[in-house]
Amino acid sequence: MADEALLVARVLFWIFSAGVLFLPIRWAFFCFIFASHLDITSLSFTSASSIGFENTIRIAGLPMLLLWRTGFAPFKDMSWTLGQKLWLGLVAYAAIAGLWGGFSLSAFKMVVYLAAYFVLYAVFCTAWANRWLDVGLVRLVAWSVIALAIVQTYVLDNAWGAPEDRFTSFSTPQYFAACLVALLAILVFSGESGLFHYATCGALILATVLSGSRYVFVSAVVLLVIASFQVVSGREESLQWKLNFRNILITLGLAGAGAAILVSYLPYNRLDELFTAVAADNTSVEDVGTFAWRLGIYEEIFTRLEKRNGPQLLFGSGTSSGAALMLDIDPTHYDQDGIDANRVLHSEYLRALYEWGIFGLGLLGAFLVVTTVGFAKKMASEGGGPALAFLGVLPSIVIGLAIENVLAGAASAAGVGILLAMTFAWQMGSSLSSEAVSEESLSPESPVLSA
Image (tube, rainbow, N blue to C red):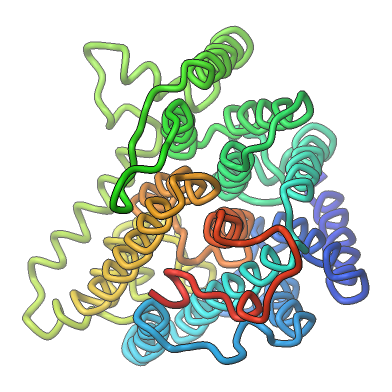
């Protein structure tokens, strides 16, 4: 069945890739978002020694195609400010550090991932500003990717969700779930209502539970807690928060329904391990599935960092060099040609410190601070509103960077979902008119592109 699933995924990928090129630009964006859920090379691929053709198109080709279809508007008259310089500095340093990492092809891929994030953020800002993207399209995307996941999981033998039979599209369950929560953040803070709108939110929550991603589930809970408050404008660009009991009731209802479904119908879901560890007196976080294994990786990273000299601590061991560490500690599971060097350490913070040193981690940390501060100022000046979507997706970003492979997720379901929420939060605030977009909107200012 895996061969049949790959064939279906490949056919869908090329159909929707063609849509990015030929359909009206609004539907080109829909096709791109859908294509981000079609990770054809994730099942069996020698990542360290070869390049997948479809993945190259998805990660490098389609973002550039979207940029071309916008007439390169996002980069016209762009002012190079702090946020841009920090991210592009990280891209440049990742490229330089690849010279001594020992995995040159994987390092090249990492540079492409980081560059793709930059391009897609700019393109999505322009798309929201021109209303090529809107909340209606987000709802359509939500139902479409859930339908895709139903086909992959229950019709095509769930090769992407194996071996634990997790609910997912043609993408890893973690990436799929992160996209769902990002879409949920957009809908929750869009200010829209109605039965279909709430049904879509409920479907996204249920699909997130079924995916079994523990960190994304925690992120979704935090998102719903944030949504339980109402934000009102304060004086001197400050925010005032007050409880919104209607939102609290909706939140408690959705949470209760999700818990009932999990306990009654999904007793072997991965989230059940998390609940058991939290509720039981004689268990710890090490009892939660793969967490103990990850703790072992983190411990080994710190052990090796302690043995480094000053220059090694400052500049790191090179982009993608984490693969060498994993080949040493788990040679039976990984091999030199097949290891995915950009996804093996399962913590972007530790990966940055290990591979790029204090300098590279400083670039990443400074970028995150600048971005968060920029959005915080926007939320304060607008009294919440759509800008809160960033606050809703921030837990996924922060926790994902701590325990997952977010930096290598450009043009994936997770990366695209997070970028959609961030650009929605920036472009759809009260400062933008719902009328025709001005010339300035075609070269969007943002805390990522300019802070």
